[in-house]
Length: 421
Ligand code: NAD
Image (cartoon, rainbow, N blue to C red):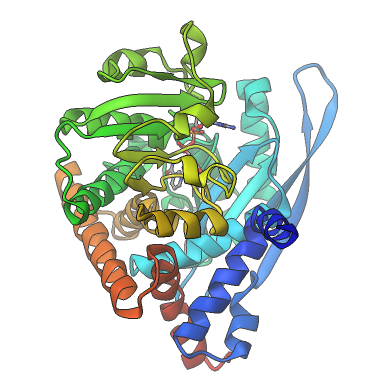
């Protein structure tokens, strides 16, 4: 009992639990401990302090990070998060996950990630612009279209990407659309980028229901989080004929066993993905996860399904749109229960895949239609799903470990060819 409490506490630390799974994956693939020593942590992490004059005339110093996990395959790539709880350990773990996502989807990148400790909800437009530009000035030496390419993440959007791209272009004195992805279309953004993560999750759900013999039409879906990933996913599920019975935001959720009016909720949500305060009869996020349903999609934050609540989860399929919503212990409990869990590094890789398409389009100065982007995304997602499903079966491991094995392999091979290990 004491042991299990300690293990659960440990695995809530995203960085150390990621390292554990990487170690197991590399061992299964036959790599040496030296390879693990190379890949267990980022090659580079920069901490910056950014002074910003606030609207009331005072100066505040914001702390930010940029982590670059491994650039053996190509430049690093990954989002920038604006959130009060950003911390170095989390940014490091997220950069490793980006490496794994790029490995799974066969993109010519390693993983990167950035974050700034701030609360964008309490900041004005002007303060956010100054912070975005200040961050780019602070990290400009280690980023660039062939070095490390940022993108949006939690509480950052296409406007923030536009300011960052403009700042970088002014520093370098040439137009640099390929410096950052997730830009507005008029500044070189890609068709389909806004909805890419939710599209990727939708494709994974489509493949998972086939494996479980569930008809998506009429299937009951619960989604935690109603931001970029969760809200578009709710729409795609609704359009596919599934019944979205529960959704939530940071304040709580709403539930209707007959299916919610998704279009109404989309009209009511604000730019931070919140809507629930407009409803009287709400449920908690904890209750939402335990609802009777076929498909559960955590699309908000990490550590939501743990050893404490895993055995209460009724969904037959869990598809992780958020990064790190399920602990290792919970994954084991769910696997024993027969729940099919599609891990984050596969399910949420649609965003980085279309970011890659955006970068390719910027580099060639030739832009694709939304249809073309969606076709290419579907092929990448289905190939990646099949590869991981096959790996899970042939190695008799769960989908998470299989995804780590597929994701880490290319980076290990590239590091080996470069003579690093
Ligand atoms: P977002 O900021 O647009 O929305 C986040 C949603 O989660 C909001 O509805 C918010 O109210 C809710 N939320 C915040 N804290 C919560 C809490 N404590 N409990 C319950 N709900 C809470 O973010 P997003 O872009 O939709 O990202 C959601 C998740 O998906 C994150 O884990 C992110 O890393 C992951 N993800 C996003 C993308 C992308 O392209 N947007 C790509 C890959 C992974």
